[in-house]
Length: 344
Ligand SMILES: Cc1cc2nc3c(=O)[nH]c(=O)nc-3n(C[C@H](O)[C@H](O)[C@H](O)COP(=O)(O)O)c2cc1C
Image (tube, rainbow, N blue to C red; front, side, top):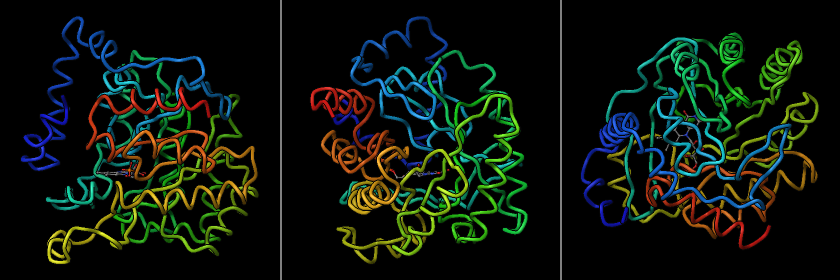
């Protein structure tokens, strides 16, 4: 059904259709029975899908990756589409408009997207306000970042502000230092600044009577040496888990022509071309971190088989974004059914 509509949806600018679909779903969700219909069509439940990780119980392992519902506008509707958890953000302390449009591009020949959104969001307090009205019990993660204008030396203050503001509204946190679209952000993945940042955020959690898990989201473009540094830091700072991976700046092996890519310009690539590298990073991390360390695998899951591959590589939970755009609202049901049938 979605595949029938997709060519029409793909005629419209990707950011415009995103906003239109959001508006439509928000309007429809006010109508009685709409969410029940979504659940009937798209939920897939099976006891074997339940997963306990860092003190939380996930109803299934397939989550919505950060960036889709940055401002927590649609949690209750998205929860009816079969996600086991939803990550909001990246949010920053102050609202910011992000980069100039156009900044989101489809690469249909590659089943991919390129984005240079630049952390457009309405600020952390807007998310806190909306999460206060949420009805669903779905697990929500808070992906936090820094404002573009904040220099890296004081970035930890932005992360701390978002962390404190969101504390009562989310179930886990993600420190995002891996977006390629905020100038200089990925430098925070270097050893010394990363250690300081993670120590700061983790200590904020430790000061609370009830602690919430803090995860780190990393880039797929790190070298083996940098990944080894990250493994060391994750262990030393007592961070609760890692999300691998964010989008890549690589353009290797694409079907989209060089001319088309030049026209699109800079940004992070997601979807099918990211799959292999992201799985490779997950496999590396699992080996280096050992069997018990929580890993969320994300990047290029475009089919149920891709999801199973990520779990076999060592991921405990998964997230999707581009696959959801290409495959539609039935995607999570298909993945969850495959996982239940494979009995991983
Ligand atoms: C349009 C768009 C916006 C994104 N925004 C964020 C973001 O704000 N924070 C973040 O951590 N990741 C963001 N991501 C990255 C995704 O969460 C995910 O890590 C990446 O797209 C790889 O997964 P995929 O291949 O399933 O899309 C964004 C991705 C896309 C396509």
